Length: 403
Ligand SMILES: [Fe+2]
Ligand SMILES: [Fe+2]
Image (cartoon, rainbow, N blue to C red; front, side):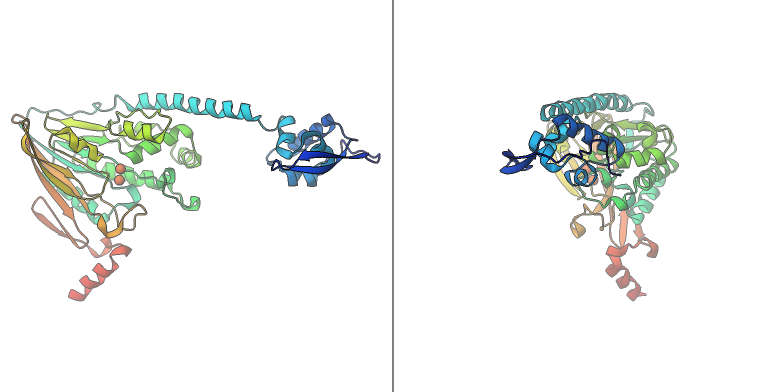
């Protein structure tokens, strides 16, 4: 729709003057002085009003506007300045202040969310006086990318061991939509992914109705929490798909009686500050086990384990406090196709721990989940045909050949 409010019928008077183009390069322009600066900005405002959902570009104004280019360039030099003078775009300084304000406002919101996350670490504590404590720990399942054979083994171990504590050691959820791994927005499945993570938490609770379940926040969960504040498009989608929720509902904390351990302060300004804070997400058990999502946990000098690297490594350590002890870096629990996965180099597994809370000593039993078979707590498992996924086609074919 062309705007006709400021159409001038008289012949424009033209003068040659030098000005700057949009790139800041000096050019000689033909100036049309029959339109005042006010005429031009009024016309531009009318166009903006007539097309409220449209970003007004120079080309768009050429098609829809009334004032000739020679008029507005004469007054404003270039189109961004024309927009600014019409009050349609913030001035550079105002823009800077606006961005800083938004950043601080976001941090204020993050402070609230951080407060909401803390204090959830003991809500569903289940203490006992037993000298020997048992624990099953796992991490890096990454919701939809989780290996079905891994889950079958894990649930079976949980049912058999009935540990005092189940430690979900971070990155149970993934939500790559919020991360650095580029995901085609058309393939986003935030609700499906959160639901898959919740299904896992539900199955863990069903397998161990009496256990204390602790969920240590990994970098992927923290990322989801951060996006709650920024309310990005996928989060808006999530909000519309899961009604009336907060962090406790998002991760099923109340529904499945799960403690959430999140000591990191997420109201940070830079990624480096966030990383520094994230290593605070850990928990000590019985004075002799440290559960830590990140490998930095090993430097605390006590028995324990970390996740995050999706690769099993065990260190035999010794110090005066604990004597000889082990530190385990656990494998993950995801399929090899996972976009962040380094293919065949990474491996899957989880950990059973038994602590003597009196003598402060710990025995670990690492459970390996392989491509075709696995072993956990002395039991052997074979991958069923429907548990093979595309990356294991070769292994599946070899298995068929043996029959
Ligand atoms: Fe991970
Ligand atoms: Fe991680």
